[in-house]
Length: 362
Image: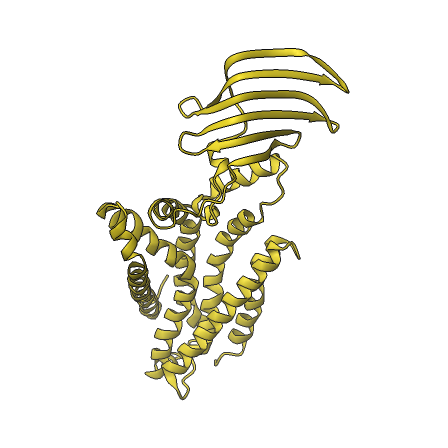
């Protein structure tokens, strides 16, 4: 049961956190709008796409990145004011221990962390998909780095395709081949002059195709030939698209499915997607850890008051972000396991939080 004091602190926590979100979201939106206003004027983007599809999702994206830092700032801001007004001292003098004082903070942090967890895994990625589609269509139209010429791609560990040219406008292919191997020897070969994606059926339509089978060095007779054939292949038009931030556009079920699909193809370079998957679960725990760090820092009444506390808080947040980026770089380079790299900042700062709480004023 929450006591009156718990509700008071919780209300201060949540209201300050929401105020911090409002201020920083407005600043971020204004800066982003000033950068993109020329593109908005020059391109045929609609008012609905700007204010309904883009900016609400942009604000969610910014908050998804910065909620842990916003939490730390909010905790330090209102707790420092409580300490400055001698409210923390009065609470402790009333016989309430510092650890008991942490209860409403932890309750608020858990609420924010749970919202952040579900937002990271489901809501924000779907919003990013809408937002970044607008960016790719109107703002940065050249960010697609997907290959379209002389593409060699494994669709399973023992099956490779070759595409001479892929045309994104109509999802068509010129000169298409499938090669299947057993024990590193070619056993199946299909070639077609062209292929076209049929979105309604979810299949490829092959034109002027030929199928051969091989037995060692001896070529068997042609087992299939024709003008047209519809076939299902582990290949989609999306496989020819590769945006730098594509991993942020998939919700967690899609992201897991994509990672599994790439691994089943024998593609090992999925670090970017695994990092994104683990990050979504690690960051909500960061909120709880930074709350535990912020309270003992701001609860002590010192000279400098709010300014000093905020400077310390922003410094800790900057250190955390630096360590987080540093560990991600190492994880991306396979210097140590990806999961450990993503959780390393939380592990390190958990020890800092434990030390600060254990040394806090009684």
